Image (cartoon, rainbow, N blue to C red; front, side):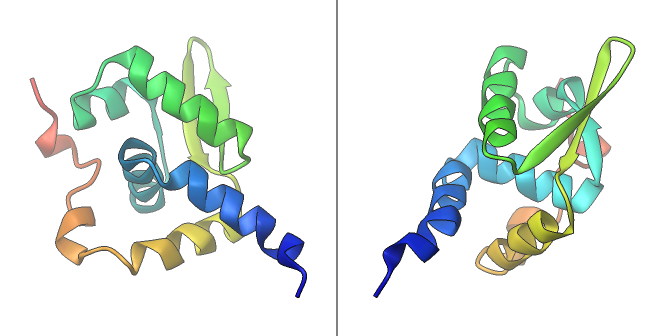
Length: 108
C-alpha cells in the first residue's frame, strides 16, 4: 500500500488538530469570512495568538486572506476546503459550533 496518497490529508488534519485552529476553520465555515479583530474578540485571545494560528492555516493552504486597506479578511480557500472542514465538523457535537463567531458572544 502507498501511504504517500494519504499525506496531504494527514498534513491538513495535523494543522487543524489544534483547538484554536479548529475553532477558526469552523467559524469561517459558518460565517464565510471575518477579520482578526473579530476573531480575537469572539475567542477572547490576543491578536498575536490569533495571527500565529492564521499564519499556520494560510501556509497549509486551508485559508486565504484578502486585504482591504489596513484590514485583512480571511475565508476558507475554496470549495474543496469547505467540503473538507464540513466533513470534520460532523465529528463535533452540534452545540459546540452553533454559536461560533456570533457577534452577541463577543467577550468584553
